[in-house]
Length: 217
Ligand SMILES: Nc1ncnc2c1ncn2[C@@H]1O[C@H](COP(=O)(O)OP(=O)(O)OP(=O)(O)O)[C@@H](O)[C@H]1O
Image 1 (spheres, rainbow, N blue to C red):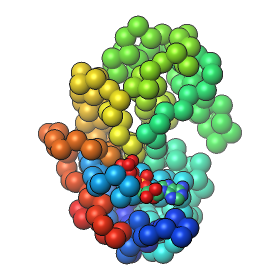
Image 2: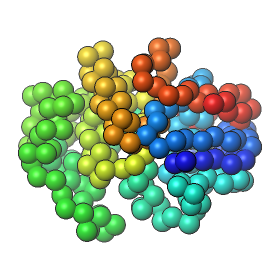
Image 3: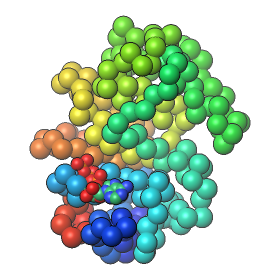
């Protein structure tokens, strides 16, 4: 088992229950879609899994270890979160891709060479963009893919994707789906929020966030 939620409850201050006594299991290398109406708590679930929010009751385990016993920076290297609104800093695409390698927690990790970075740009159909392109000139969809590549460079074991295809044309969305399927086949657990009615081939399970903090798997 990769990630498990046991009797987890969470609400924002003075808000209704986002999760109430929720139990979920995520297996290593499986592909999950998270669905639910707008505002039901899909992003919150992903944020809880990487400790960007802290649960108020129950426990979340990553590889049988309570996540509150793992330093947030270490947890997020293994359980990477790619948020819905991509955040890139001023500077080049290269600067942004290599940003995590400047963090103290990654000081022992060797940064990838340009050739590897360019390979990622090509494989995510970021044609016309080079490592020297200015990051603030990219579209939302392009920036989202740069953020996804940036998290992959640290070789996470779980990747949490908040609607990564929402701003993409069908061809680019297909590429992101194909690449994330590939990751799951390589043993990475993929947990992706999706509003699409279609369930792509290769998805192992749907997690639904229902009313009143209930979840179904
Ligand atoms: N930081 C916060 N403080 C207080 N309430 C919040 C906060 N973040 C989210 N919420 C509220 O919690 C609820 C769940 O939000 P969340 O973003 O998890 O939903 P979602 O299912 O991902 O929505 P969408 O599909 O629209 O992106 C919403 O009612 C939202 O307004």
